[in-house]
Length: 164
Image (cartoon, rainbow, N blue to C red; front, side, top):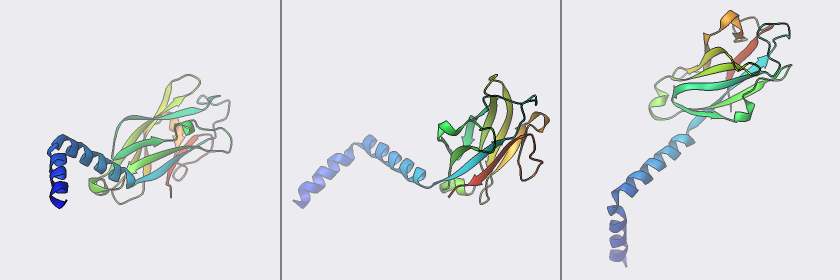
């Protein structure tokens, strides 16, 4: 019985492509299991008479290829909400292997939902071993602000926070 089982295993292992594909799939699953989450919050305080005002809000989308990012989740939350509520974008980023000792990032663009025009760009950025933060890349007239660092009145406020 023991020799018969070993014979079956050898025949099964002989198919090297199957073993390689199974191994890569397993590594991918393990890596995703050790990803972390962070959230980008958006609060829109732009009044109707402002040139950046948008009746239908703003859409925030990833742009280009990020590093150590598994992607954006909950695509229904990408539109900033007017008033006191927050729009929310969740992000998965890697917390294993070489990503733990290297920086991670993802670029985003902010689009006016009324005109379809890109009105700003920012980068979600995480230095290895630190908490994530945002870098404003293309921000005409301080349209977007990080409320921790700047005046938050009459702006599209974008900030990030680790999510448990």
